[in-house]
Amino acid sequence: MKKVIKNGQIVTDTEVFKGDILIEDEKIVRVGEDIGCDDAEVIDAEGMYVMPGAVDVHTHMDLDVGFARAVDDFYDGTVAAACGGTTTIVDHMAFGPKDCSLWHQVNEYHRLADGNAVVDYGFHGVFQHVHGDTFDEMKEIKEEEGITSFKVYLTYDYRLEDDEVFRVLRAAKEAGIVITVHCENHGVLTQLRKELPEQGHTEAKYHPLSRPARCEAEAVNRMIHIAAMAGDAPLYIVHLSSAEGLHEVMKARAENRPNLGVETCIQYLILNDSAYDDPEEGLKAIMSPPLRKDQDREELWQALAEGGIIDTVATDHCPFHFKEGKAEKQYGRDDFTKCPNGAPGVQERLMLLFSEGFMKGRISLPQVVRYASAEPCRMFGMYPQKGSLEPGTDADIVMIDPAGKTVIDRAYIRGASDYSCYEGMTLDGRIDRVLLRGSEIARDGKFTGSRGDGRYLRRGESVLISKK
Ligand code: URP
Ligand code: ZN
Image 1 (tube, rainbow, N blue to C red):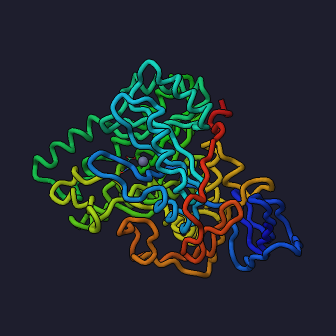
Image 2 (spheres, helix red, strand yellow):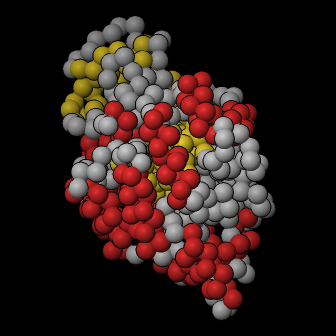
């Protein structure tokens, strides 16, 4: 099968130029001008941007949090991803049973994803304790599964204490593994989540007050120092949401602290805490960390524009139903602390970054590719196979028509959830078509692929490792 994408504006993370892309047997074969190929199907890309498929390195498909389960399984969630221009995800797995081996969730996630995912996928491992065999299991999983990143949480029931995180970071550095960390101060937020409802403050608007920005900043600062004490261990901070947290990152950047990766998520760039004003609608945006103020948003955008501070823009995609099915978000109707944390975003992310970032002049087009595709792949050992348009790599491609519009309404939604946090927005630009390894998987917002088209990705080492 040969295809040639003709006359598009080709966008990489460093440049934009007019040209053609020749695809054969799942791979990009040539990128250049006036590529002729008589036996190839021609895709006309005149007037369109042709970019690497987007890569979301922070999703939670089918996440089981005990009292609720995220409503996007690996099929529905990756259909939403495909329709939104995302051709690869790296999913953060849920905690397993108490004291389980690290292998337990790896096996469970293959059961959930294999044969269901419609985009290519990998997994981050997860630590929920540090026992005798834990570090040997981590090394085995890297060797046998190509899982080269693991997550630790500083809050929730299976959080790790500082001594455990220190040991994990040291062992991970030794093994060439990146540790990703959910940074929030558990002690403070636990106290606030206890006392606010006791004082009768049960509405959604108290959610951000229960998880203040300083909870994030303190934990970010603590992790940066603990990683340094662990021998500059590779550390990747997930879902940075606040200006206070960002200032801690900027201090570390100013000191040239090595082996540090930083992610923000699209919701922290687009939305603010006014989403919690309405007691009912506010449940839709209950997530951790919470949405912040406009000042936080502006500083995050500024950091993206400046470059060299934040590496990636992901989603933390973790949707529940608002009104349909089990209406899990309604568990928080009388007490926000009972609402499952998380919201959808995997479908919306790329076009929000394109429209609100590039089209509104906040960031450049190569920066859209850098934050949505290239850097996520560099951070997690997938570059250049994914996230680039280099000859010899996977032909994962998204074509965007900048003259089109994307209306985010109920009809737009391709995942299983019954809402989007961005409903009511009209975005500048429209995804025309999406190719996964050369085959079309989405066109004009409709899924055109098949269940199971996605392949499991064994990942290599992160760029954070090679910087040591
Ligand atoms: O609210 C969120 N982020 N839900 C998903 C679980 C987590 O905290 O990462
Ligand atoms: Zn998450």
